[in-house]
Image 1 (cartoon, one colour):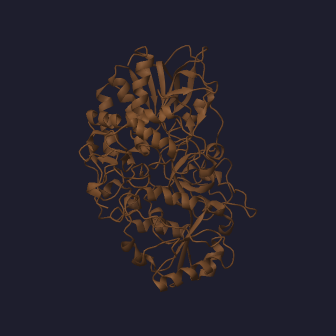
Image 2: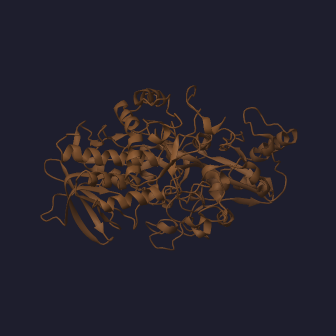
Image 3: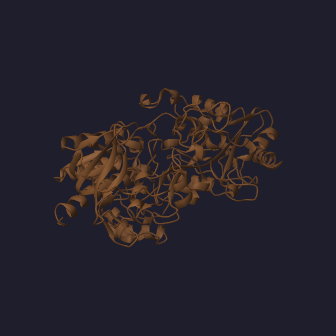
Length: 616
């Protein structure tokens, strides 16, 4: 396939290159623990330990498969998660005196919040935007690219749109609804289809310099690196923050939201924040509150309740900046309904750190995650092979990014909801030949803009050594030892390796698991390495129910006055029961694009409905 001349005249679902949130996270990975001791009361592992140095006990390695011996789901170690609470956060009563006044209060200054605040201010609203972190951008700043299936002006030169050119949002909606098995709200999907391109063009007007991707289904900031995907979108979030400043948005950083304020008539009229993590302040939002603080990738209890497939099949999250679900719980507290049950988005290669005493949320480019995503021999706990999905654009540009989500599904769904990779001492000799691209690319100090990466992870070897030291990547002298310590029954791993080595000797793989001949490397030289993996969660697609004007809807079917929510606090962008949020890694706009578009729509409709009296 010629990437430069890709058209959509005869393309099927998998016949175009998808974009999405190939997101790295905003901080270095959490500390890997040493010897395991007793669990401190209410402790959290590593960076989230209540005592700072508590190292809770975890089961022996051989007992940490995702399912118990009777086949039932074995829960994650809750101490590995930043949050483990699914209870609604009740609203506060209207105070006698407000500390701050505004027309619209935006909660969250990530990709969605920055757009919501800037759009509302541009349209004339007085806006306060509160953020728990000390800087703007959230997880969105480190996303790799923004998917868009048509309607963005930059795609016109290549006459690209899906399902055909010229772009027709109704045709895209019809196609997408079939992809979602009609489990989504067609009005919401149509809104996303028709406004997605406009939101990116609006961001360009605000100062974001976009460029079209190698295949025209994705865009990225013009000056971002082409060599890998770390911190690509930071240029975009920085530009939107600067635009919001020029329009008068009042940003309050290190001020996490604690609760909504609801009056006696049921209208949401404000937000309670903890300013500077110290002083409680009441912000009066005279017209609307917009919730754009992300989803709940890092809240075990919410995952268990609302996205059981992710709770079982994912071994880690790579969103270290928040994602604890507070805004979702605040919405529940004022009577909001839920949409998008059991839908999420994941990449492949989630490494099971938490089962060995490490943290659940890991930096995407931590070295070990990159190594886990290469085409090693991969099996389930029965010893069956699992197929690998290639991410090389040069090999098949139409499927290269789809591979990232498809492989996640493959790794999440075997018996026990875990997969196992194995390779031998010669593994470094094979990496150049694998040549995996996008966020699977192994980071080395010579890469373009490598200074954006936390120093420890600028060389992938460092993170791999961390995993070996923590016994997350198990290094053993014999396959029999490795088999036992991965928790596999006798003969499962050794038999699988024997069959693999036979295929390597033949130079031809089984047709069901078609590795190219140049990837068939026999596993013969000790020491032998093995790791337990699953999905790498990057987006919860269950969230607050919204209508096509981004207004939050209650369990009584009525709009909750004064309350709006952008994705991923809101749900419904891909319907129900989706492992990876198809069609392109999360939604019609990928993942970070979904946040961008949602914020733009929230800011637009909050002003139109609450200030301009519903006049567009």
